[in-house]
Structures are given as C-alpha cells and as structure tokens.
Length: 407
Image (tube, rainbow, N blue to C red; front, side):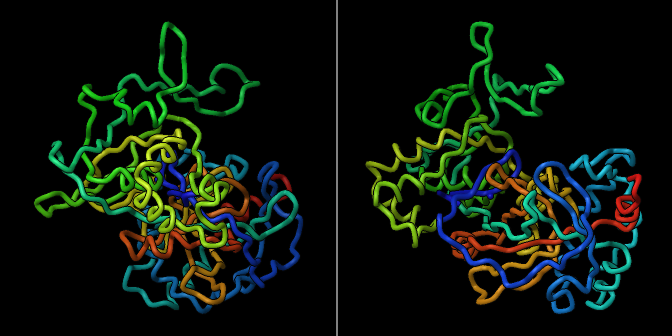
C-alpha cells in the first residue's frame, strides 16, 4: 500500500536494495504440526497454539493496535462477500467483521489486548514448499527530500504524475491459459509496446506535457525516493508535502548495488543503502549512467493526511507494518514475526500487520520491515537483512473452516 542491490516495498511496487550477504537463521524451531493447509505451490499453513509462538507473552501487542485498527477500518469498507487474497483461503472480508468489531480500545492494557488476540485468532506457521519456515526479512523507510512546486534555480529534477498514454493489460483476461500478469505499456502504431524506461523519461520523454508534480534538488534523492516509493518533501518555505506511489512504468527493477559489487566499487560485506547513496554523490559523472540501469520508474501523487500509504490503502505504522507477498499473506492480517533488527543482538518476537507489498517481496516467508521516516529510519532500514520467520493469525471463523476436512 520496499534495498539498493536499493528500495521500498510500497504499492505496485517499488523495491528496496539490500546487501547480498549470508545471514544466520534464527534459533527458533517451528513445532512439528499436522500437514496443514496448502496455499498452492509455494506455501503451507500449519495450525498451532499461541503457546507455540516464541516470546508471545513478552511483546507489547498494544503497540500494534493502531496498525490493526487502520486495517480493520479498511476491511469494513469492502463488501462482505469480497474474496480476499490468497484465494486458497476462501476468505471474505466478512470473515473479519467479528474480530474487527471486538477490537480493544487504544488505551487497553497489554493483558486485555493479548487476551483479545488469543480469543479471536488462531496462529498458523507459514512454511515454503520444502517445509522450511525461515525466510529473508529486509527493511524500508519513508524518504525525506527537498523540493519545490515550481521549477527554481537548484530545483530541476522533476517527479511525474502518471501519464495519460500509460496502458495496463491483464493477460489472464485474454485467455484461461494465460498467466494472471499485468503488463504496462503504451500504444504505438496500433501495437502495445513497453512504456518508456527510466533513462528515456529522465532524458525528457515526458517533459512539456504538464505532468510534472514537483521538482527536487538532488537526482540521487529522486532515485532513492523512486526506489522507496514514498517520501516527505520539504518546500523552500519550510512547509511539507507527503508524496506517495501512484503507478510504475512496468519495467524490471535493477539493483544497482549489484553492479557496484561486481565492479569492485563497494565490498559485498559492507554494502548498504547509505553506502550506495554516498558512492553516487561522490561519483556524479558516473552516477547518472548507473542509476539509469534501473529501468523501473515510479510515478507519484500528493498524499493528504497521514502516511506513507501502503498497498492496503492505509497509513503505515513504524516498526509494526510489514510488506508481504499477498499471494501468501492476506493484507490486513496480523503476523507474529520473530527476527532481529539491526539494533538488536538477538531475534525477538513482535506483532506486525501485513499492510504493504513490494516487487522484491516474493515467497512464502519473505517480508519488508517498515522503520519509519527520515535518516534514523534509513540507518536501520539500510542495514536490515536477516533470517526470520512468521506466524499468520487468522480469525477463528476462518481457522475453523480451514480445519474441516471438506474445507
């Protein structure tokens, strides 16, 4: 609703680059449960109890309530019969009404909130097709940039709104044998062709069409904003605007950190978003060519109110919102995550809410941890790459239905 090998996970979805390093699995072992529920070729759910969740009694679950309240408010706007992803769960928006209707107040105590989850949800371990419960968890943040609403001296890097000639095509609509995949392009001489690349857009392909949304003062900041997918712009008068993901050009994401490693410019074991940003600014004569290798371009919109906005359409909560693969994890669902963030020496459990997605966030056990806004968040997000695992919390009505042999 996101890494520079860089990036974010927000909406269609920008990506975050991360160092390509070996990470150590957590010491927590998933108990051996029944065969579980098949979510297709890539994931299974294994029903468990809250006593099986490492550290469940130690977290302050109250800190995740604001995120869950936002998700429940969003779910309440959907028709009761709306089928939610993943379709293998056969779960509708209506299945969430009872659990969401019983949400504790924000000022409820830790014990009351913990009791609420234990009485309204059932945890399921998530494993991949090989039965593995460990997966990769990276981090993303909301960028802060300097910008102007009109072109001024020193503000000459435009961010664009979605163009009128951008066309999306759902392949599956043209035949049952075609994949459920969305293509983005434009029509030229009666043919659908790929949309303009980042290099073509930066060279002025969209200039003069009135699509400029805002002008930044730094091309490197513009690049990182595109990778993260959202940000806060400080204007010359000191006021602020929040920028959010609106669309993409549909091109493949290329992690420029990989190129810096392969060329020997940066060592693999110390690669981070900060390191990539510093290299780009220290090498302006080579930075443009390197950034242009990432064909993917993000179009933006101005967001009124809280943010950043995740794929679910709600404002994200720092350290409690997680970007996931929506083909495995339903958006809006609580998750019990066990992982170590960069400021922690050991993995620990915390309640999260699945509220966002990302182009790089794919797989049964894969997540992107939202750290918040600005440089402090970047300091952690840029170093976040750890092995962890999570447990999906589903409403009791869904869990009971899934447990029936004929479900």
